[in-house]
Length: 74
Image (cartoon, rainbow, N blue to C red; front, side, top):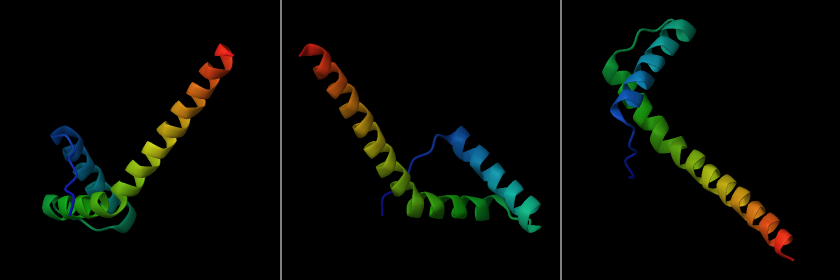
């Protein structure tokens, strides 16, 4: 299992946001521990997909820019 890293201030805000979401959208009050567990689960299960997509997107972007530069050099 790859443990994701979030800076403490980002993780703290994400926990606050999760707690507010559950309260506002589901009418459920969850604690910090439950929100932390949910955040870890989401990060573990979905995070790698976002990361891989971001790597693909930046690779495509950079490849396109290199092609543009090479086009100017001809």
